Image 1: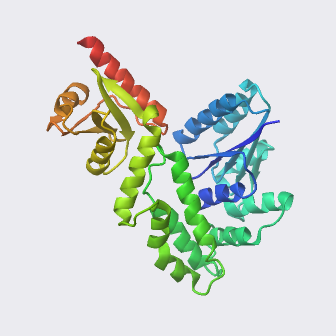
Image 2: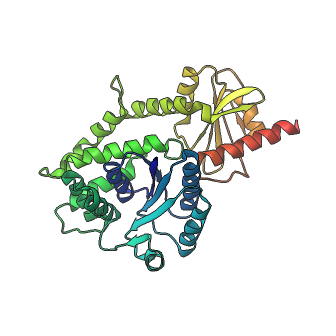
Image 3: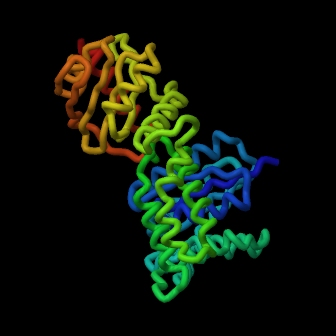
Length: 344
């Protein structure tokens, strides 16, 4: 029997903490992260699609550190009826705004006295056994998330909170699995400090080295260069999924990648079969890079009403709709390319 857990959680310390905890108890688990609003609905749709694709005999959708509206809760429950295999829904949260949902739905567990990470640890440790160091990490997260400023764990919690919030080295929309692994590595390292004297100072002093240890797979370098190299490696792994073609020219499409000049050039140098690099942003702007194989100023003019230089150009796509799923972004660009090619 194939059994799978699909875990959706928030994008902060408490949210990633919940997922880090469940990872210590389960093997067959897939992680998703979301902020509030439309993204929750898009992620839920993604989860249901993944459940159908995996063909799991039984599945659990676990939602942590995210409170739903009544309409969302009703919709989420109703949509489970269309899934072929049995699926259980469980939500563990601590936001008071979810009280109405908690009173109506038995799968909606709410406790405002603990952080979601603390709730998650207490829930699974009672079933599968305690893990002392993991429990200490849950206490640290709890201290800062519900702001227990008189707790001995509060200062370390503040450092952990800032660590997760400031770690934007990876794009979680394009590299969701790698970003989750990065967050887990940060939490794994933080857990080692929970009972050290002056733990908050020691952890803060070592953050740079901790990050470098994640990205460094060989020769040491600056963190910036290591991150750039890692991003290119991720693009190479996913390039088939991200490939686009415009008028016979092969390109790769990214979304909010950042550092386009460096990442784009490095990718094109390492992948000479690609002619151009295209990055779309949430602000509807587009950046193009090339390495002498195609004039991207012409592509920018035709696709994005822009222009620039043969190897570096930009523009904007007025009708672009921001999304939290890479597939939705790519579908829009593919449709745009098709419409431009057909109009010629």
